[in-house]
Image (cartoon, rainbow, N blue to C red; front, side, top):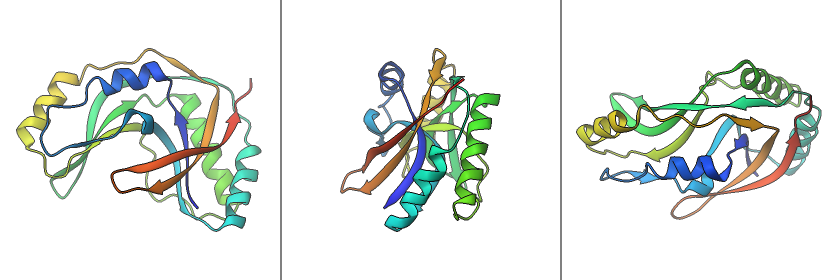
Length: 178
């Protein structure tokens, strides 16, 4: 199974993000149903390890917190823009939950995540889109802000690579409690 841990987003936030999509040739927009904020990518694991992951995540205790999205950014590599994303505000609650998840998964036997946690929601893959169009999009949408959303659970998703896009399936939802 190919797994990741994420926050699902409410429909109204997904709708606001989706309303920005379009207007840049050569960009593959992520379908709104796939919008999420990844807390930890796990990758391919055998069935027994998926059970260990579930047990580790089920033991996490963290309080609900508010999530806000604010601003639009890009990820680049070698001078090429790879993706467009909405930036998530790094709050103490979000950082605490992500740290708890990372610690639990390492205790379950997964190797540590090598990348620094950068909370975001991917909106598009840019595959060689014209830089002027990308700059225009960023300028037009950089003031994007979502209303605060109360996060009361996190989700273990499975991911199946499809022809056009990945298919994400929520496998288990874990409640946050005060």
